[in-house]
Length: 231
Image 1 (tube, rainbow, N blue to C red):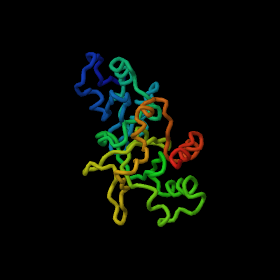
Image 2 (cartoon, helix red, strand yellow):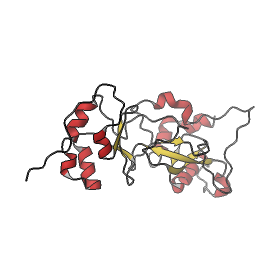
Image 3 (cartoon, one colour):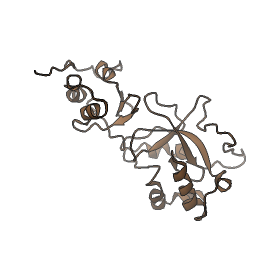
Image 4 (cartoon, rainbow, N blue to C red):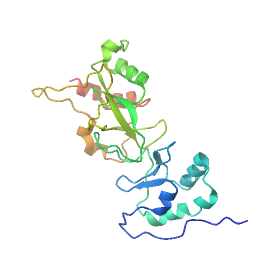
């Protein structure tokens, strides 16, 4: 029996901002500002690779979407999104302090106060602080209490190569409340240390490869940010 596509061939008018019924039906979302295609299913909530047939492969391998629902999707994307979509690891990042993207997962994470470093792993945070800011000393809680913030993070990618930016919580702050923890306070007389959002223009570069876990230390070593921030 021949499979018939449920996707009717149609080209959306240029600049049409109305919901794409095909993508909505398949629980996908197109972010046209950052040119990423997001899987909105609860177990994903991250952008997916647009190359070749990887979108339809994702729907089948991860969510068992029937062939009849997937037939014609690759052509639909090609015909209706002429600018294409970027890989999650290549897409430009929104500014830090943005409102959370409604289609992405929000993570409880950590931000280094001394340099540009984000992670969702407390172990990776302590390793980073020990290697980069404590001269190799053990990162005990008394030593690191003033060196990091508890923050909300989002990322386009869903795998180990996630690059993060901070987003706001319900109170409008990027710092999430944790019992016994005080957020960083800045004296109005003292210059505020640079943070990622101060470098948003550079971070709009789609070739920005900043990562926040295993690759963070080499990145810092290459760029020399710790020395810059510490004077």
